[in-house]
Image 1 (cartoon, helix red, strand yellow):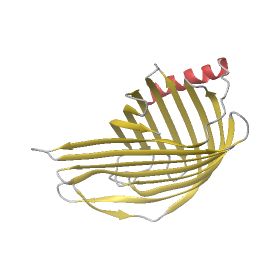
Image 2 (cartoon, rainbow, N blue to C red):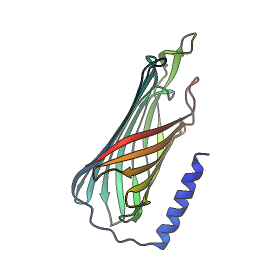
Image 3 (cartoon, rainbow, N blue to C red):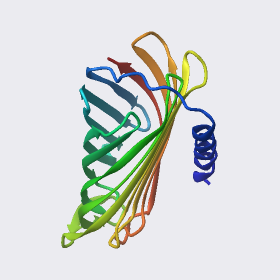
Image 4 (cartoon, one colour):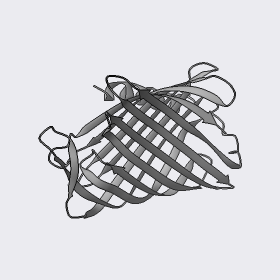
Length: 254
């Protein structure tokens, strides 16, 4: 099951957090970030085009940290769209102590094949960095807030091709959100990254888990091999609850 490697990683990290007390260095000031891009373009008996692009930006100003992440996936096979997803998350942190912070976050998901026209939530909460060394980073944050979504049922023709969508009524509810991030340098050029996010509401529970291994090519470039899982507990009829995605992307850090 996909969750097994994650449990091992989190269990190891929690133990390490109790045994190791790494000293924090003052956070670097100013903008930093990374962009990822993966492209597949196949021509012949089957025409397939896939674009997977990600952008992550952060700005540290004293005790304030602002971060933005954007994820775009678009895939077509013989000119028929098979994947179309756009995610964006904005978060602002305020450091309370060297390892603790409070935050406010807004997330928006537009996934054509998820069973929802969109999902959006606004949350605030508390986070703690259990490990924050040069080699290993592990943090957990939990918050609550307000969420809204709009169910969407795909309309298919006799061949099973999606030709439209039937949108339902918008629904709103209180949400509870938790996120765990883990990063560890396996070698001087290779690191493991894990990001698990769960957004719970009585109208739908959304789980996102991304596991990646990055290998440095140069000071700015790296190659990333990743496996992602996205799960909705209550998608519309005709939509699967779980999507998985395996990618090989080029990463540029700045």
